Length: 175
Length: 175
DNA sequence: AGCCCCATGTAACAAGTTACATGATTGG
DNA sequence: CCAATCATGTAACTTGTTACATGGGGCT
Image (cartoon, rainbow over all chains, first blue to last red):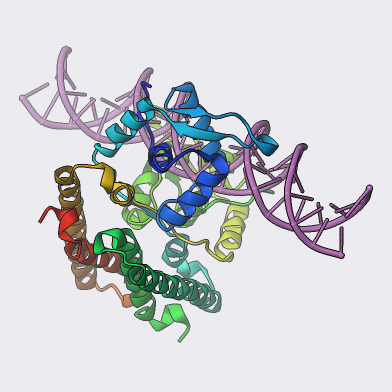
């Protein structure tokens, strides 16, 4: 195919290396494996799959119950995946609406701001705890450091964010 | 307007509190003020501006040289902004393609991976340095802690990411 | 058998990105 | 005064989100 893969489509091809899967399955796989730093939705997945089927990168297998259709990787798909993987990855993008609210905080009564901040802090604390547990489990299951790098990214990120929350000035936290 | 504002549009309204600006100006303002954690493009800005003009949240002033058109906030716009600001901000989203590459690294020759990692590390080191300088300048110019919270977010983020880079196992860094 | 919930997919919409067009300015 | 560059905007496309549709399987 002429038009180069996007990251979402490429990761689908990556997952299909482990055998054919339906769109629905792929969503689950992706959530489990890269969901911490790469979100995708069913709609996207189906769109990419049918586009890639059109381009010959995957083939649809015969359809099962309720129109379920698994896709298998083709050789072209394997090649496209490798080509994508060999390109320098783009910069990350972060969008954090809470920071917008903070940036415009002078237009907001102080109490509401503090409540928002507290809610978000709680979410991050919970995520951090989740990552820690995940990491412990993975280690117990024999994971090597190299298998933990993406999880570790999440860990360090959440630690940093939590540290930031805890260092916020009282005007913001309502202290 | 019935349909509730999105964060990008809302921040435009926020900036317009300081006086009328054209789309072009707004892009610059946004880049300077929230660009570290909220990216937007000219196209978006123009689209939101004309939509908001249609909804009466802003009014276009008479057009200057090369079709330049400044927009001013209306009372409805002010109200819509406040309403937006009072809603609980959504979770952040992060998408880091490098982490995808890492997640699929077993399909990639080790040397290439190390090069990608090194490039990204350099970018983050530079950003961290930039933030530090910015912070020092802001402090020198009399900024209070509350004025630095979004910048501090960036700082802590970059510190964390750099720490993560420096803790990567040798399989990844090529060490 | 009937009902409810889950699995699976699609379609419509909104937001974000890339590429392009064109009119001012300004330095040589 | 010409050429190069910057300012400003628009159009086309891609990606991401929300809402909806529907068929099967399990539970009573």
